[in-house]
Length: 294
Image (cartoon, rainbow, N blue to C red; front, side, top):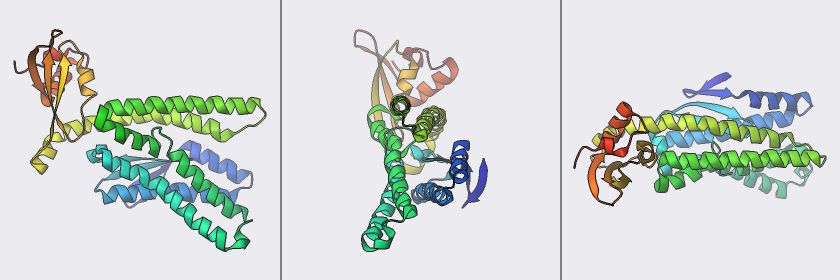
């Protein structure tokens, strides 16, 4: 649901966010509702400002009860360090607000029993720590992916982070069911479990398109920078091209040495050869079909 535009960025609210806000307001928590709305929005604005500071173009932001998901229109979003910086800025902002609130709490005794003020502190803590969970599309999941990308490549790192996300969603669901059986119903656990599972599934689709955009832009990056590091990969001749593609890293070009089962090099292919072969023969074609030099 589109709400407004902010500096050229479309801000939308997911229906789960709208439902939660409505329920809080219906049961008399109008002040808490406004605080939650303001903090989630501010959390995402900080992400957007840091992304803009890195020269990225942010297209839209979808707000969820526990944070938001920003769609960045630039392939530089796949730069691991930049992604980590942008992701960390949100939780740090929440913890910064907590630090300011605690100073006020210590110096203003009349605020120490103010429930709205205490909710403000708790809400920032929940937003900060929840978003640091190592699960996509949360900030912690993006930081985890950024760390894994240098080791596994972007696509494989995304797959690992998504598996962790779905596992954590199942754990949250089971914990919520156990507490419900024990007589304690926590709707936020169920909401968080479903949010993580479905948002992680969506993140996989978004990551695939971002990955393809990045691959197609490498020639432009090379022309702009003049130099690009080369990574050498070795692959068995009968391995599917999909496995090679999963190990491609961003902002690096790839040379693939193709070997037989006896370990002898039978040919090689460059990254562009792999991409062309995938486009013509599919991702399950054998690596040997991409050989251009023997």
